[in-house]
Amino acid sequence: MHFADALTAASKTKSPVCVGLDPNVGKLPEGIERTPAGVLTFCKGIVDAVKEVACCVKPQMAYFELLGWEGMKVFWEVCTYAKEQGLLVIADGKRNDIGSTCEAYADAYLSAASPIDALTVSPYLGSDGVQPFIERATQNNKGVFVLVKTSNSSSGELQDLPTGDEVVHEHMAQLVESWGSAHLGKETIFSCVGSVVGATYPEELKYLRTLMPHAVILIPGYGAQGGGAADCKPGFLPDGTGAIVNSARGIIFASKGKDWQEAAKNAAKQMAEDLREVLKSSAV
Amino acid sequence: MHFADALTAASKTKSPVCVGLDPNVGKLPEGIERTPAGVLTFCKGIVDAVKEVACCVKPQMAYFELLGWEGMKVFWEVCTYAKEQGLLVIADGKRNDIGSTCEAYADAYLSAASPIDALTVSPYLGSDGVQPFIERATQNNKGVFVLVKTSNSSSGELQDLPTGDEVVHEHMAQLVESWGSAHLGKETIFSCVGSVVGATYPEELKYLRTLMPHAVILIPGYGAQGGGAADCKPGFLPDGTGAIVNSARGIIFASKGKDWQEAAKNAAKQMAEDLREVLKSSAV
Image (cartoon, rainbow over all chains, first blue to last red; front, top):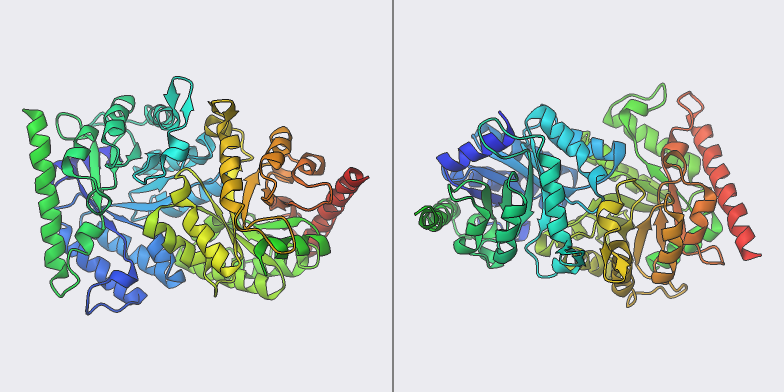
């Protein structure tokens, strides 16, 4: 099934909650070893806790890479496990390169056999740094999420530079729309090329929604970074599709005690409920 | 020793040649297994062949990641081996993220114990996506190379957008200069924050050299991508320092036969000679 169709269906059935798997070993709950094996146990435990509530998980590659090749082994095991448990998997690697090197990244993460459904991509290099990912995504029913307006406070240094009548991130949004418009789903209006826009910039999110009518927007910055459900609302279409919202720390580290799985499940449920409330009010 | 001092010294003693380790398994010479073990054998063989000629190697992470965690194990083994053989090691990962995630990437690659001397960084996120790398570099005598104007044909889509009286890559160059100016070497005028500017844009290279007087410029795009020694010259200062030039395919795949090591050595020597000739003429 086309990635955007699968993601939209999962988002409707469960919720638009994406759980960020950011296994910072320094923050693991008590009783979990601060080793690659501990990270595996923890991530599987989070997957088990949220799989009925969230539409997808987003493993953050940095935390696995920090543990060397043993960490990368765990990364692949976590992706495989999440997929087996019925979750879509977005690898957050923000990869980018050109030519045959970019093809190598695309083959590494978006091959037909990969348990990963989509990869985040950083767009400084232009089309050359994105097209090989889109090609693999199109071939293998996978997806790509291109950074457009990120949630951090300094994102404007480059992304808000004025250029002509617009700013850089608006220009990037139009590139994302053009890259994706030939690769739409069969059951939705969305393409395999999504975008990343932070919940911390709700005004920009509202306008970017109009510039990218065919892009699913992955919204980070919820919870610990300061974004609330109401801030995310402009990323959604009136029918409640078109966006997913990521929270990592607020869910996976909801408790440092032995009730960490229960606490993660409750935090994910609460977030899903908060989003449902806010989106309901827009439909009326 | 400060990274820029070490790199400059190695560049003077040997040459400004940086050998790109892009072990595309489909292109390995005859007699080398197309497996992680084969990639390790090949990369060690290239290190042995070029270690007297090149100042550094640049392992391209995508080709290692393509081989899964076994590939990452080989990546670390290659970095360690190159370091042991007296070469500086620039990991080409184009990593980028924010906050604690960016710190995780920085700790993964630029810790004091890491065999890696420098990492390439993609700057779409602004300072938040670069400062954690610079902090680790400053603490541990490591370096960072920030993408400014890349060698690919579509690099202008974002990097050449006009903004005010300049274009985006010129603005980025000034950010690079400002990020690095507080972290200069003791024996050179260069900082631990370098930049990447492609040999395929010699005019831009010339101007960017003036905008970043304290940045070592890593110049890709030599050889297979079309750049020649003369195209690289504007990246250097009149004394022949301030830049290193990367070639991958032109050196590592110079022969597919059993003479691949000899061919790589000769190609690196020829490149060093071509650069020496061109730089000599500027000093006169």
